[in-house]
Length: 421
Image (cartoon, rainbow, N blue to C red; front, side, top):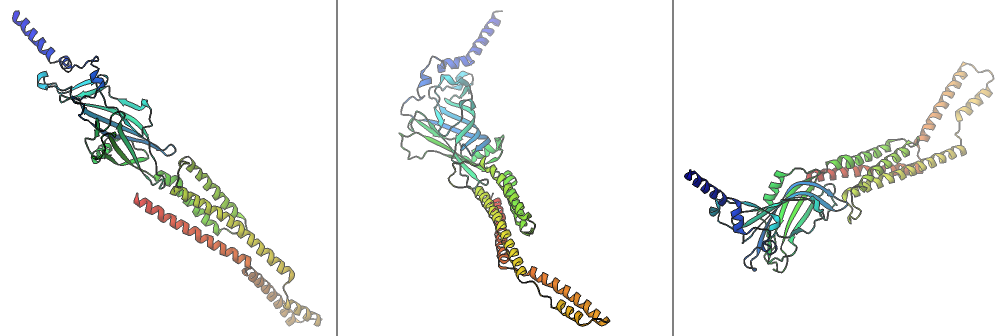
């Protein structure tokens, strides 16, 4: 009975020695130890605390052209060494890792300079991971929204370089040094592997830039992550670029509509209104503060201007043709066509009181020849163009050439840009 009690006491003693409580007492990890919470965890104040900060992208939530912001879903991991929280794992039953609350130790005050997101979008790990060497690490997931100067000149075939700059709010480079435990190639491959969503954008590259060695110690240490994003333009090509090109084709086909019916002008006005409706989509996409006009806006405005000039051209051509017709009518009224064959036939009829069969046949032939001459004269009058009609045809040819050249150039440029992307 005594042996059993002794073994139970020994077992209870070993269990208590192998618990985390003995390690917590050894490290003095209590809420009352304010020194661990306030001061930088170094034994000599001249020692620099090196903070490793790694960032991985989980998803690209969106790029907002109006507000010039980018929304990302990121995972951020920080690690640094606390010189007061180390132990020999063999003395504590092989404990090689322990989770401790965030509130009882010092944490670097690292912030993103371009951050524009609210506090509710950050999901922080409530515990820190501590290993026997005193290395502390913490992770946080965040729906990050940050400002970025977007270059929309090549929209929608654009690429955006948006930088995130991490730095300490209170400590200079001599006290806190920011570094990364990897490189841009590793973080890019890891982000592409772990990505959950991309949407309209795709991740091209994630670059990391550390402080130069020549940076003065009194300045704050900075770590910059540059996110290279590329837009998928297929939706804009289908909904905006190709419809505008097709409407330009329709306006080109209007040159084959006859001017006499008056349908050409109404057709061109309909095409112009259709292009105006498509241009309203740009208002909801492009920011009004853009200094340089994007290529898509130049393309849309050029087509709208060309079709607008085409409407004016149709009005001018109709006016010139009407002037030519009225001038020809006036000329006909002033100089009616002569009929020599008919006059000669009347003279023959007056001379001969009783025509025979031969004279009757000649009279019929004269009538037929007179009719043929009138028809031929009318055809010649129709073929004969006045100066106003010639000017209208010249204007039509010039505008048709401009339309055709614009369509060919647009197709070539669109093909080259598509091949580059």
